[in-house]
Length: 614
Image (cartoon, rainbow, N blue to C red; front, top):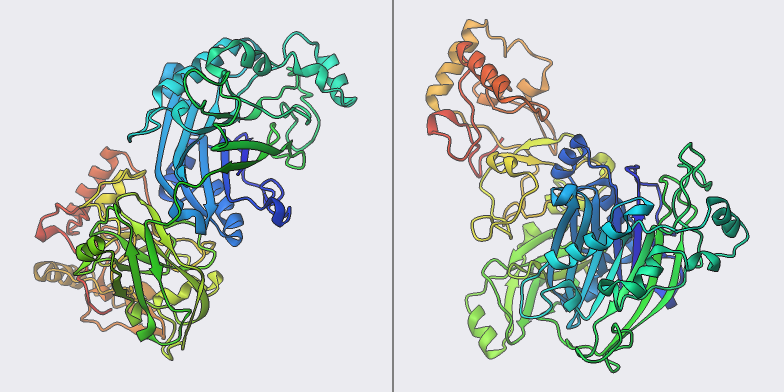
């Protein structure tokens, strides 16, 4: 397990983080899991709005770098500028269960999330492990406040389930982050002298965290490797020189990584320092800083751990059986067997992933794991069977993986080994599910696309309500945000759009008859303004896969006005008074009302119909 902590100081991500993640160290140190804790990620209002609509740039960077090494994002949690990401190799996913997250604010008396802690807990092969990323109060004199805040985080964070409800109830806890502990008593000149002459041991005994580990009961049992790297704070940005500003802050080891093993019983183990009778043991292989990164006033710190334990889970909850190659559509048959005690749901699905996928919703296509005899197969331990339709299969050659996604646990509970798909490409053009293999540079950069609002998602909101970072977008049924050209693949949506492959073109927009009359009257009054726009592709042309196609004059799309559609070419934030005033002006000018809310009356909505042609 590799653990990384970095206070990024609101900076933009660097171009390469390969060395930080220790990805090129060889097979002997090849990590199975990676936990990344960030602090002070830019969380100004404009950035938070963008990150609410799209994945933040730091998460995108780590997913892009780790996916070629077969790491999948298992879970993530964010509290303002504090982010925690947990990755694992794809073949470990079925053995990572009971995944939960929590966060605790401690800034401004608990009302502000600039300080505090975020955590991800999960069962790894049956052993409960918790990753806790904290950003504690700054300054030398705030040591007691740091202790109180850490105790508050431990007390406030509680998880559901029969075991490991609190953080310290877990078999293994990794505690890391910008803990902000400083070096006491020593003069800044002596501290710099010790650093320059590599006599760091003379600074250890004055380190506040080292002192606290032996005096604070709340830190009892937490272990840390030797600090054989220079203090990681505070540097001039863009350099490896310590603070040269007027404040002249004293260097300190603010960025730390600790761990704690649960004691074998209440009466044994002084602070739980020794393993639980061979059941679980931890050894630290590496503990270092990375001086090559200069975008922040902190240096990132990484640690590699070897965790040994007896596996409590030998078989995955769902075993999937598939042929070694699909060369014909009729071979796309998937057989799966559910373990005794597995809680299946009618909303479970099996995703088809390209090798190198980034997270569980990063599929190429999917099929519902709904079998008529599903319950009987579960009771009698028989194999159920589903089949991918020809339209859902990617064309061309490539390596793919199948994964069973459990709606109950919100995680992948069964995967296959990579297998080949070799299907001939259609003459008319690649299917929507195949374009994930095409060049992202050829993708359209438009951000708004009108699609039919009827969508069957593998994680439907009707059955299970999930938290949304952008609750207002749920009102716009017909609005879908297409990923930018830097994203790989056609669809990186957190939920599939339909059981069938999406058409590659834009569906027609059907207006009610009474509104057609109003639009026609308005067009006549304005002197056939729409017909005069010969050069406008919006009014006259619909672009398809085979090239542009002329739209007849009778088609409402040819006369459609963007204001009449209720959508503008870009997202706009307006004050309520401005929006109401603008709507009133539109009504006075004769523009019909356009509301995209699901509760809109029939006379005031223009929703595209499913199955309509452009």
